[in-house]
Every structure is written in C-alpha cells, then in structure tokens.
Image 1 (cartoon, rainbow, N blue to C red):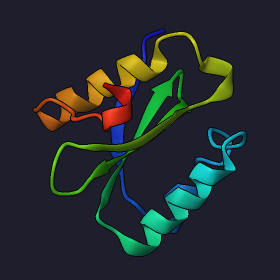
Image 2: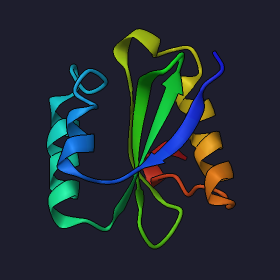
Image 3: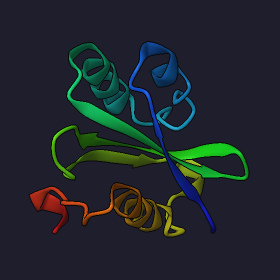
Image 4: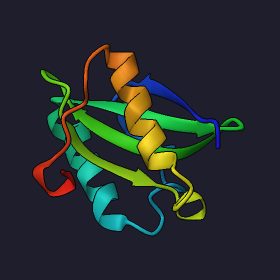
Length: 102
C-alpha cells in the first residue's frame, strides 16, 4: 500500500480532520486535543489515494514518536511501519520509538 507522509499544522481545524481516522480510538482524539492546547508536538498524517489513513504526533524538539494511530480499515497492511519510516525520512533522522514499541 503506497502511502505518503506529510506534516500538518497542529491546530483545532487540523485536529477535526482526523475524526475518521480516530473514530475507534477516542482516547487518542483526547490526546490530540490536549496536544493542540499545550503545543510542543508535530503532527504528521499518512495519505493513501488522497485520504488520511494514519496520524502521528512527534515531539517538537526531538525525533521521538509520542503516538501513532492507523485507520481501522487499513490496519494489518504495513501502513504504520511505512508511515513511521516515511516520517523519519521527512525529518532526516531516525525516529525514536517509545520503549513499549522496541
């Protein structure tokens, strides 16, 4: 599944555009709203055929993944793995994963 990764502004308007991706994960919608309110994060989206299929928050000052969610319809197809690889490429450095992912 060829996807692209793009950085987006961390704003209430952008957060609302991820409702479909986060529909089965309301706790991450709350985390996204908190990130919008407090800042300090970078927002990335994975796109496939013009649609958003994943979202990730990265620490602002380092290439550390805070969390990632893949749309329920695209899980199990390697989207998350490819998305994280593409984010690292866009950042120009290796993405640091949380301890529970390693």
